[in-house]
Length: 300
Picture 1: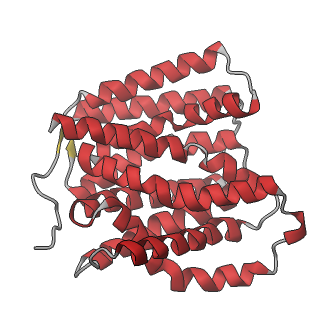
Picture 2 (picture 1 turned 90 degrees about the horizontal axis):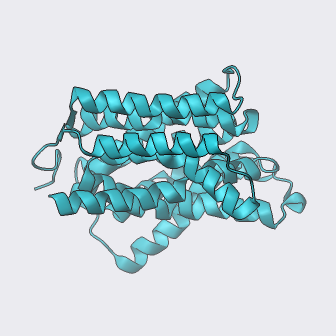
Picture 3 (picture 1 turned 60 degrees about the vertical axis):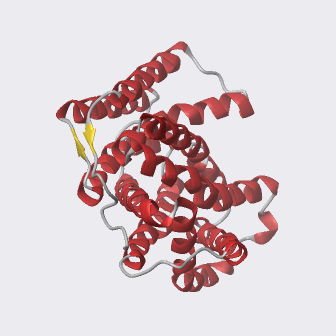
């Protein structure tokens, strides 16, 4: 069990590391591309890659209630989070994203309890809240300012993502991590195609330089698809609530990439906040979360 949990944390961290570039890349892409194209077009590109994987590897098809669970995953991580976050990040500075996304680990733990049957201890909830408050305090110290109407879209994006994360982790135990996101994307294709085609003429294709294309391809192939291979399997092995706390590190990983790739300065205050968040994540790993002994909806 301990070995599985450690592997789950490692895979979860790989997923968060990949997700940490999602909002910056989305922000670059929506400077030219319409939010609907970035938010839904990325899923259509990911669905094409998923269809190729499924055609080549030919896993068994989902059965029974697994299709309903896949619909929940698709609603959360294929439609809800990509579109809502793309629209919001066109209106808001990135610091606002940090404030609202600080709630993602809490929301993920909540849906892990509601959908996956996990029962975090009171101490776990308190440490999770503490970690979220540290990230919010950091965002406010960066001059995030007052909340705006578009922040409601980010709140909705958080709820969509956390539901899709918890449901996907639950389904991974009986279907497999890469299969979950692959089937969810393919299942979404009939609904993705019409709005993407309607947006096609609104894209100023001549203005798309390599940075826009690179950002779009990143959110399509990595954020929307490949990162979920590690993320879903990590949560299935280590637990939705516990591994979900790794999302608290996402803001600081994003800043680390900005330092590494763009030469942005990281000050002492940022390092102290990052250390405080790391302590909260490590602390939460030691706290009790009761998990169901068998997958809640295994298909026998």
